Amino acid sequence: MTDRLEAQFAFLNEADRLKHVMRATTTVDGARPENSGEHSWHLALYAVVLADQAEPGVDINRVIRMLLIHDLVEIDVGDVPIHSANGLAHASVETTTAEAKAADRIFGLLPPDLGASLRALWEEFEGAQSPDARFAKSLDRVQPVMANLMSGGGTWKTYDVTFQQLEDRVGVKIAKGAPTLWDWVKTKARPWFG
Image (tube, rainbow, N blue to C red; front, side, top):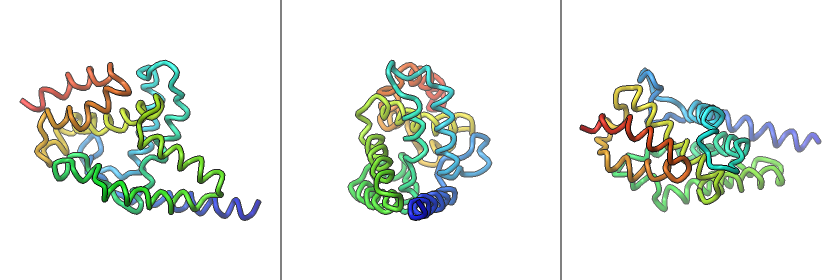
């Protein structure tokens, strides 16, 4: 029991470092960049509040769990903005390899049964093939859009994002997991792009 608790708290203490990973996305008032810990918490709340946007059969509790752990790899890798470097760095082989290595280390801090379970949940989120993961991924994409809308354009201005880029890099993922949500958000976002 003592060894298990040592491992669990080692993981939890390591997870605290996510609060120091700064993202490109700002808080909705535009006052400062949000950190990845805040982002993960906000996404969990998005899942609770927007659960009615999920397709039938989506397990919101699993979605919340995914969203709470989805960015833990950023402790080692940092935030890679989806609109940076034409969006290529976000899904590059280098980034995905670094994230997998970070997942090995971070989830490896846990007792093997719990580490394997959370690692599998993280991989499910990354693969975005299950209904739960598609919905979780859609929320991960919609939250920065809402922050940009509320903060006067935010990272769209910083990275000179076009509406087509927004649709290709973000809209497609939102629509896969929450099509009605993307239709609503798209109408809100479109005027920002002229």
